[in-house]
Length: 109
Image 1 (cartoon, rainbow, N blue to C red):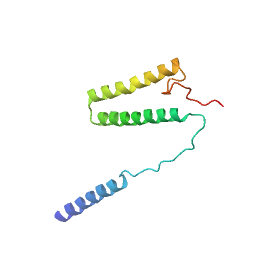
Image 2: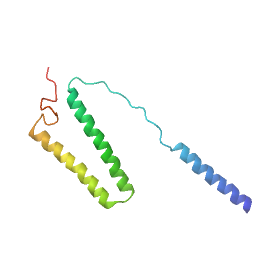
Image 3: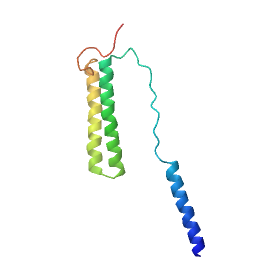
Image 4: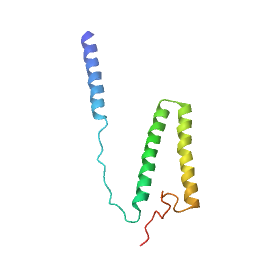
C-alpha cells in the first residue's frame, strides 16, 4: 500500500509540475504594423495614451472580478463606461476633439 501511495503521489506531482511548465506565461512577440500617413502623430500619441490607460483599467477590472470584489468591479467598471461615454460624446460634437492642439487629427492631402 505504501508503494502504491508513493507511486500515485509521484504521478500527481509530475502531472502538476508538467502542467505548470506547459501553461506558464511566455513573452509574446509584438508585431509592428506599418505607420499610416492618414493619422497625425499628435493623434497617434493621444490614441496610444488612451489605449495604455484602457489596458490598465482592463487589468484592474479582471483582477477585481477574479477576487470577487463587487465594489471594486463597480468602481472600475464605472470608470471604463464613463470613458466610453466621453469618447462617444466628443466624437459626436467635434471631429477634432481627440487632438490636444485642436487641429484636425486626420491629415488631408
